[in-house]
Length: 147
Image 1 (cartoon, rainbow, N blue to C red):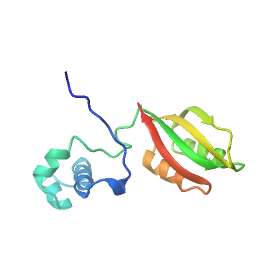
Image 2 (tube, helix red, strand yellow; image 1 turned 90 degrees about the horizontal axis):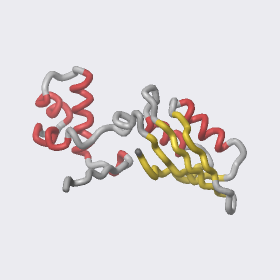
Image 3 (cartoon, rainbow, N blue to C red; image 1 turned 90 degrees about the vertical axis):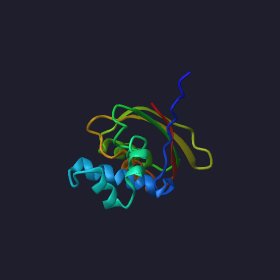
Image 4 (tube, one colour; image 1 turned 45 degrees about the vertical axis):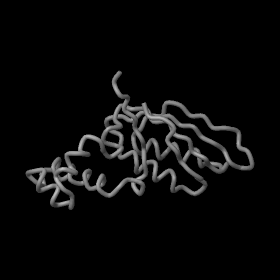
């Protein structure tokens, strides 16, 4: 039986430095700023073997999310206009809202479950989530699923 691949979504601060450097090296190669893997690896301070070991295993979240559905839960204060501000952020990043479910607030706090489709013209999803998380009245944002 073939081994099943598992995926994880991590915040940047939880990712080991070597993996972040592999992403930087891949960007240098894709942008044509360097001509070889050796130059890219040297530029970011990793070995070629580290690059080859991890190159197919790490991607910026927005790079391989196109065409995917992301379901997130957002814990938020029950304030007029806050849900509208969250939905405006999703629209500003050109993601397509598929479902919205907001629970009845308990003690002034509501849970919002939001499913969005990542379209070809969707902007950087990690920036969108960071923007939403940074809004006043948002307690946290967690990704529940990615399909």
